[in-house]
Amino acid sequence: MSNALNEKLTKKDLWRFGWRYALTAQANQSYEAMQACACVYSMGPFLERWFSDNPELLKKKMQNQLKFFNCQTYFGAAITAAALAIEQDEDPTSMELATSIKTSLMGPFSGIGDAIFNTIPKVVMGAMTAYAALEGNWITCVVMILIFSPLITWLRQKLIEVGYYGGAELITSRKDQLNNIRDAVSVLGVMVIGALIPSLVKVSTPLAITVGEATQNIQDIFDGILPSALPVIVTALTYFGLTKIKGMTTVKMVWLMIIVTIVLSVIGVIA
Image (cartoon, rainbow, N blue to C red; front, top):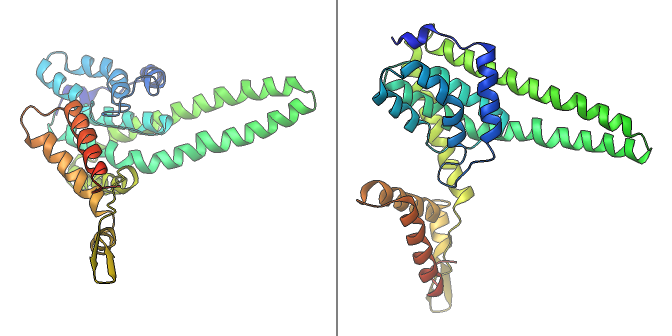
């Protein structure tokens, strides 16, 4: 067990973590990794504190956090804090568990976070301040903003504390349960990623088979066998190309997909 497990971050440390995440979660994104840079930036000082004497392990843990992650920022910070607590363990399986936790939770908590912190507050605050403005009561608008902003910041920080201390408990008092937990979150992560495929990958074909006066759309055949079959096939081929073809990079794959898509669209194979 790593000596890092004997240290628990203080609330002051977690405030530092929270501000670093808040400043970069929406400011430094890419389609390849989304908020991964924010994860590394917020976790970096603490990983360096714990593993500076083991540069190779520190490098692996930093690289592990550069994997794709995208979540509503407040819940994203809490999930990343939980991953930080798990990464305190030197056990190599801790990196796999931290990634699985982030992957499995980012989708469900994005929906919850958008409703709680983005949609509802904006609607309620917008309606109340708009009514106050119509009545000429600008003081009420200012007071509500002064109360609302610190409240939201406090709630975000409490979520971070729950995430971190919950993750710390997971790898200490419940360490004997890690294998079952790891398997469970890995399965959930696969399900989340699988559900994202038909939502994000849009591929269909206009091709049809005509026999006499009867016409059968090929797309209907695919949908009858497996709904969203073409998006799954495209995703599988992309994954195969990135992992199996030597010298293939994300940028090269993007250009290859653009070219192939244009060609197949022009000849009428895909829509």
